[in-house]
Amino acid sequence: MRELQQKQKFKRRLYSYPSLVLAITFGFFIMHGTLGVVKKDKESAAALITLQEKMTNLSDREMELKNSITKLSTDEGIDEEIKEKFNVSQEGERVAVIVDQNNHSGTSTNESKPWYKKIWNAIIH
Image (cartoon, rainbow, N blue to C red; front, side):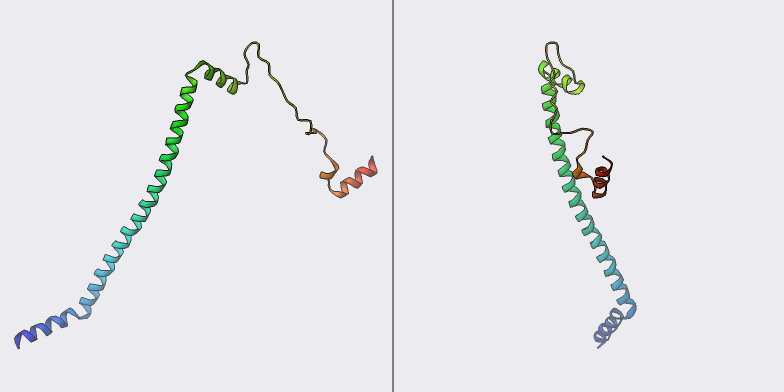
């Protein structure tokens, strides 16, 4: 009988309002901590993807730079780079300038003007 009374007393204390509030508060803090860990995990995964993309871009850039260094280690590569950067030519070389004939500089066609300007120009000229 004494054991039964002790068990009932224990159950009353376990299911009392203060212990239920304490249990709910404890559960809330555990859930809050778990959600924080999940959030950090997602952020870490996104950061990992970003860093992998940067690493790929940097390795591509490294290959481009190595190719440029290899190219500039030859005399032809140095001459080509100087010609490209400073717009110069060697003795005996000539520069050809190609002018597009379809490009009319200074004058515009009537089709690009509004209708009232077309009429005004027709009256004046």
